[in-house]
Structures are given as structure tokens and as C-alpha cells.
Amino acid sequence: MEHLPLRKKITIMVAVLASMLFAALNQTIIGTAMPKIVSDLGGMPYFSWIFTIYMLASSVTAILVGKLSDMYGRKPFILLGLGMFIIATFLCGTATSIFMLILYRGFQGLAGGMIFSTAFASIGDLFSPRERGRWQGLMGAVFGLASVFGPTLGGYIVDHFAWKWIFWIFLPVGFVAFILIMRLFPSVPRQAHGKIDYFGSVFLAATIIPLLLAFSWAGNQFAWGSVQVLGLFALSVISLIAFLVAEQKVENPVLPLHLFKNSVFTISNVIGLLIGMAMFGAIMYMPFFIQGVIGTSATTTGFIMMSMMLSMVASSTIVGQLITRTGKYKKLAILGLTTMGFGIFSLTTLTSASTNMDAILRLIIIGLGLGCSFPIFTITIQNAVPYKHLGVATSSVQLFRQLGGTIGVSIMGAIMNIIMSSNMKSSAQAVSGGATGGSVEKLSDPKLLMDPEQLQAIKSQFPQDQLELFVKVVEMMRTALSDALSGAFMFGAIMMVVAVGLVLFLKEVRLKTSNQEDDEEEETPMPMEKHVHATK
Image 1 (cartoon, helix red, strand yellow):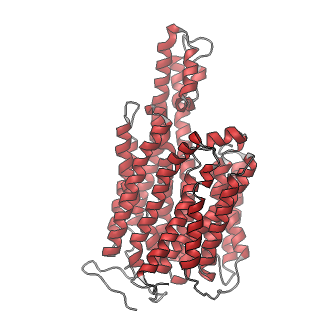
Image 2 (cartoon, helix red, strand yellow):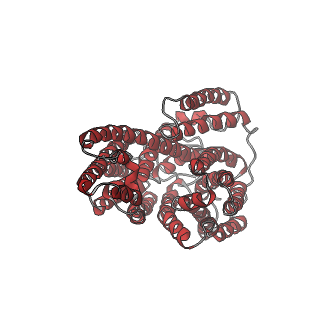
Image 3 (cartoon, one colour):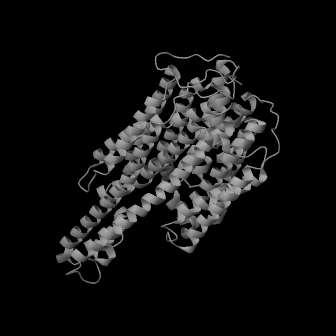
């Protein structure tokens, strides 16, 4: 498709971006609507599955469809993904029980994995590695915009309309994207390279799903050392061994293991995993600080978190343009990861005396670094592998980033809980004397800091002469939560230090100016004194 006129390429990319925006908005809009949905449908113990099932389904299909799209072309899978997503999204709005919603969200996840996998790979079909920078930057901007407007719009819809409209409001965008891609996206005939690797696909899914479940449940539903969590880890290890054995015996593996012999592919994916750990950790736990420590309302917290996403959109777009113009990326990667690491480290300096503006400034720094590094490692991987493996290589980026996010959030949560438990025990001993009716014990749960109404109800139960004690206990809780979150953020900062160290070993391979270049071309370092133009 590289030979298509530029105007048609741009039109196709508009349709692809619309598809991604449709899927990303439906992924982010549901967060702020969950309390209303659960109050209507019930099933509070199962509400986390609404997120978990989507994550599991999308992670598995992304890597599997990446390989299939290499064999049979992108168009059938992006259309199938859009069609399934439209149907599943409509059905989500018709759910009458929490279990129906979980089932429909699972279908959404399967379709979402198809859309994201083929959308990122389609950039590689339409543009040479040298040209992909600006489009990868725009892809990052789409995710940023969805993260900014999705939760805000979701909150507005559930406040003024029925919650089902969070799913239905963007259906027209999906229909338009489907029609545009069906009419404009070229059908590229491809000859299937051998049989589909069914055994490898099953073992890969059996590796990913238990691993993600183990990290999602550890420290929440079950203890880290519980039979359930350890059993899931064991199942994942056994499945991984079976997968590695199976992949060495098939002619057309679902995830070619020889790709990991390519240093650029391996290092880029490991860095992507580390970025996912730090990025999702900051996104998940920074609202705890803003609401629980500073005492900001949930609505205002959403606007504060926008600062990170908006700065990410800006830097992602600019860096994409710079990569396309210069053909260089290593210095930008170092700059982006260093900036992001500094921003996450700066979160550890926040205290209970910090203000919303202190949080905003640090989030802007993180967003600038994230936007600078986000598009780079997809480009490095696409540029380093043979074109015939473009789809599976691109989907590996999503897989490792998702794994990083799940692992990072779980580990940071464990760190936070350990520090919080220790601090709260010390604080309770310091203030327990003189309290009546177990009033201090009622303040032992730091989640109360995120629920002002319940906190006020507990305050009303304190005798008038003990209100000073109430204030003291709440302040100790805020300090304990602040210290616990600082420990979690320090872990994210350390991951960024490791990422910066890894990027120093990343070869700066010249960005090809055509997809028609020899697929088996050896990695050649980019001369620093001048640009090297590819030959066709």
C-alpha cells in the first residue's frame, strides 16, 4: 500500500484514527460511570471483572491477530474488530445484570485487541519507517485525548442521562469508521505462509491469562502467597515452557522466537514493559494522592489528571514530527525516559502540605516525557524486523506494555499497602489513648480519605471534646498515605532509571525510507555526520 497517493493514505489514516478513538473512548469512559452502573445492576463483588475481562481478552487477541494479519492482510481483521466492537458496545448498554455486562465487555475486549493491533500495523503498511514518526505521534495523541475526555464525559453522562449512553453515544463514530475503512482501505492479497499455529496460540493464551490474573488479584482478592495466586503463576510458567517447546517445532509460529535474537526488538519491548509499569502506576495511584492526601474532590481530580494527558498529546505530536524529519530517535528516547523518570521521582517529594498546583506541575513533566518516548519504540521495532513480521512485531509492543501495566500496578499496590499498614499501626498506637467507643478504630481504613461523606459521618460520632483528636488522626492518615504512595512512586522512578540504562544499549538503526527494502537487511548503525538514504 506504500505506493498509494498521499491524499488517499491520509484519508485511510483518518479512518484508522477514528477506529482507535472509538475503541479508546469506550475503554476510558466507563471508569467514572462504574458507581452508577453498579448501583443499578448490583454485583459489587464482581465489578472489577468489567475491567479485568476486557484487559485479558484484548491482550490475547492483539498478539494472535497480529500474526494472522501478517498472513492474510490487515483489512479483514480491522473490519471484523470494528463490527464486533460496535455490536458488543450496543449490547453493553442493554445489560440488565452485572454478569451480562461482564460478558459483553469480554466481547468488546476481543474486538478492541483486533482494532489496536491492526491499526498500529496499518501505519507500517502505508508508510515507510522514516515516515511513521508523525503518525505514531498522532496515535499517541488519540490515546491521550481518550484518556482526557473519556472519564470527564462519562461522569457528565451518568449525571444527566441514563448510564447506557456512555456506550451508545459514540456508535456513530464506529459506523463511519467501518464504512470508510471498507471503502478506502485496500485489500492486499497475501498468500498464507503455512498453517495456523493453533497449539502455540493456545499455550500463549494460557501463559498470558493466568499471569495477568495473578498480578491483578494478588494483594486484592487474594494474598500474594495464597494458593490461588501461586497456582496461577505456576500455570503460567508451565504454559510458557509448553509454548517455547511448541514454537520450535512448527514452521509458522504465532510469535517467532527468533525475533528476540534481534537486540533492537528485545530491548525495545523490555523498555515498553518498564514504561507500562511506571505509566499505569502513575495513572492509577496519583488520584489516590490528589483525593486522599490533598483532599481534592473526584471531579477536580479528573481535571488535574488532564494536565498529564494534554502534555503527553503535545510532546507525542512534536516528537513524531522530529523523528520523521531527522530520522533519528535515540537521543529523543533518552530525553523522554529521563524526563518521565524525573517527573515520577518528583512525585515522591509531595507531602500532605502539597497543593493541586504542585501535583499539576509534576504531572505535566511526566506527560512530556511519556509523550516523547511513547511513539519511539513502536517505530524501532517495526524498523528492525522483516516486513513479513510487521503485524506480530507491532502487537508485541501492546502485549509487553499491557503486561508492564498490570505487573507495575500490582507491585506498586503491594508496596503502598505494606508501608501504609506499618504507618497506620504506629499512628493508631500514638493516638489510641483517650478515645471512646472505638471511634479511632473506625478511622483505620485509609480509603475513608477518598469518601468525604463517610468521613464526615464518623466525625459526627466523636464527642465535642475529642474533635481535636479526630483532626489529629485524619492528619496522621493523610501522612501515612502520602508516605505509602511515595514508596510506590519510587519504584516507578527506579524502573525508569533501568529503562534509561537499557536505551543506552539500543542500536540506532537507520530508518528505512521504503517498505520494499530488503527484509533481511542487517542492522547498520546510523552515521552521525550525515543522513543515509535508503536504496530501493
